[in-house]
Length: 87
Image 1 (cartoon, rainbow, N blue to C red):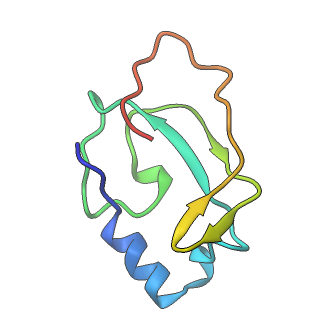
Image 2 (cartoon, rainbow, N blue to C red; image 1 turned 60 degrees about the vertical axis):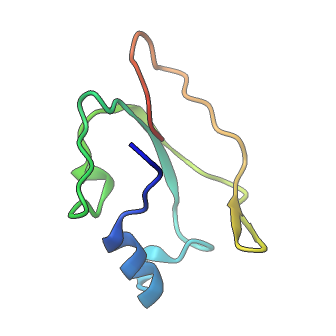
């Protein structure tokens, strides 16, 4: 799968709803097995995803510079034998 942003998430960011304040809100990253997961533009929440491996990690020390988002490095510690193709 090519890089993609979920349209419903982009819509909420543009409308700056309470659940999408990237500076103050919680941002998480999850490992995904694309052999199990199928992308859908209708997906809106982490709970909509299938094929999530382990536990989604919360990103800390978020920064925004010249249109780029960055955060502190994360580690997935309880993942074994799984095949993750997406984040």
